[in-house]
Image 1: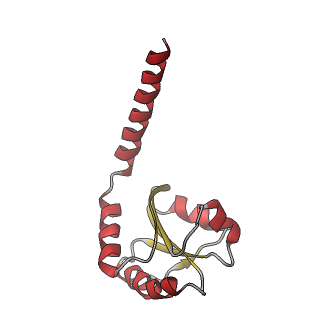
Image 2: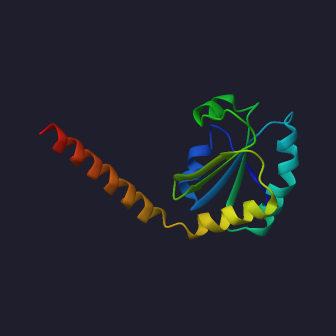
Length: 131
């Protein structure tokens, strides 16, 4: 499956309507971005069940700003609408494959529940300290 051009008009909908979405933030003048593009395209072809999106940061400056992109390329992974990975820098093919497998295996619901439990415990601890 080819990569999908993501814009401020379709970004949120794409993230929310697909179980796993990888997003490459790039620009045409960026050498590492151009080097990463064929690796990303190959992964998209090999993993047709996932959505591979691309954001041209020159054309989508507001979206890049909202995503707090400070360096490109930046790769993000979303699962069930939640950001589960974000890293600047081009990945070699093997590292991208490992990331894809890790995102597939991640139980995002359990991670969210665990995170919420830790936040609740932290708030309870803060309340105990005040009391």
